[in-house]
Each structure stands twice: as C-alpha cells, then as structure tokens.
Length: 299
Ligand code: AMP
Image 1 (cartoon, rainbow, N blue to C red):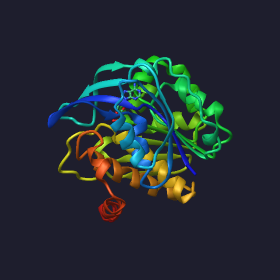
Image 2 (image 1 turned 135 degrees about the horizontal axis):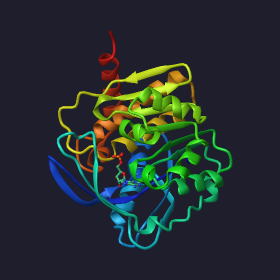
Image 3 (image 1 turned 90 degrees about the vertical axis):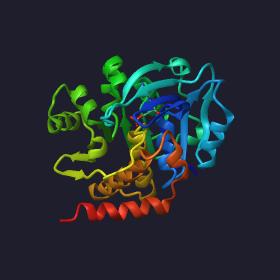
Image 4 (image 1 turned 180 degrees about the vertical axis):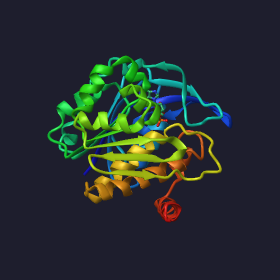
C-alpha cells in the first residue's frame, strides 16, 4: 500500500555549477521528492513525461519501489536548464520548457485516492489544486512552489496554499510571495492564510519552522563537498513527509525530527550531480548524519 502521494515534475535537467555540467539528466521535483520519501515510506507518483523519456530513467524510479502508475507519457518531456554561480544557494534559470506539462490534466488513479499524506511538490498550482480536488480526504498536505509559479500563477497559488497544512518554500520565495524582506513577517502572513506550519528552507544554512506559537531552527550541515544543489528543496520535502507518514505523528515535536531528516537527505543530495547521490544513499548513511545533527545543535 502506498502511503505518500507526490505530484510534481519529472524532468530533463541541464545543470551547470562551478564543479561541472550535465545535460538532460533525470530530475524534476517529483523525482527528487519521491526518491527522498522512499527511504521512509512507499511513495506513489503523479506526473507527465514525453515519448522522448528514456526507459532506463523509469526503471531507475521503479527500482526505489516508487509506484509510477500515475505517470503519463505524452509529447515531449519538461526541460529545465539552470545554473549556479559561487553562491550555490540560488539557482538561476536559463530556460524552462514546459512541453507536455503545459496541457497536463491530472487524473489521480483510483487506488491513490485514499492516500493520507500528500506532497504537492513544485508544479503548476492548477495541477496541485486539481490533485486535491480528486483526493478522498487526506490527513496531511504539504505544498512547495518556486519563483516561476509565483510570477505566473500567483492567484491560483494563493488558493492552493489556503487548502494545505504545511507551506514549504525557500527564503527568496517567501520574500517574493509575501512581498517583504522579513522572513518572520512572511511566515506570519502564511499562517494567517490558514496553514498550520510554514517551513522556510535556507539552503546550506538550514531551515526554519514556524507554527502558531512556536519557532524552531534547524542548522545546515557543514558540507565540504557541494557539487550540485539541484533537488535539495524537493529532497527535503520528500524526506519530511516520508518520515511523517512512517511515524504517523503530526506533533510539532515530530515535525522537528522530520525537518532534520529532510536536512540530512538534502545535504547528501548536494554531494553529487542530479540523482547520483540519492541513488546510492542508504538508510544507514541517513541515520549516521542524523546523529551528527544532534551534536551540532547541542549547547
Ligand atoms: P529544487 O529542489 O528547488 O532545487 O528543484 C529542482 C528541480 O525543480 C529540478 O529538478 C527541475 O526539474 C525542477 N523545476 C525547475 N523549474 C520548475 C518549474 N517551473 N516547475 C516545476 N519544477 C521545476
């Protein structure tokens, strides 16, 4: 039985960082998120790819026991082309080719409709809303987004945020979405829309959790070897919801643990290009770094 539903992009990524370049590598928000979630739970994926999408990439996804019955194949695969300069916290987009994503009509397979944990990973907010409309009654919904959708579909994005439990976004996106430079103010604005928690990811500097009365700050992991941060936000979100689905505990205290697991998986993800690191990651690697996180923040 699948216990987490993830909708987002499955993509070709062309990425350039100061440490190298890859072309048309397997990427996409749903790919990273479901790989990360699969260390803790059994994800089911909803997305679309083109007829040009290699079978080996689908096999790679299936190998992590991710259910791909919700993956449609039509037209050409979504392609993101981006680069990072020495400040690896900020991805710069060269090109976004929506291709088959542009006319993608979400159809949630019958067998997914009663899944209780839903991750609306970064994708068109119209498709995020449509997924929610078709679900029976999820217990817990997390939403992630990015500047592309804030710029192009702000109104629909706001409608979607009002329907979820947790809003996940990075610091730049939080400032952009709520039109303020102050992250506490951005978080309070998000809480006033009705979400129960806001998580603001700050790249290598960690993540902040805001709930109505509490505030938690998770440190970043001091990584010496960063090659490619693409997918760190999605991996964070996937591990976060995967851990919550596994433990079935939605207390603020358990959110904190889930955030640290999110940071652990994201920090591993940055160590190599594309999905190269997550493909070979083990739960032992994750648990080892989770313990180190404990030490980092004890004083
Ligand atoms: P992040 O976790 O923020 O680094 O997300 C990286 C992933 O987002 C890449 O693998 C891209 O394929 C994907 N992506 C880029 N632009 C978009 C977009 N506009 N909508 C959805 N996914 C995107």
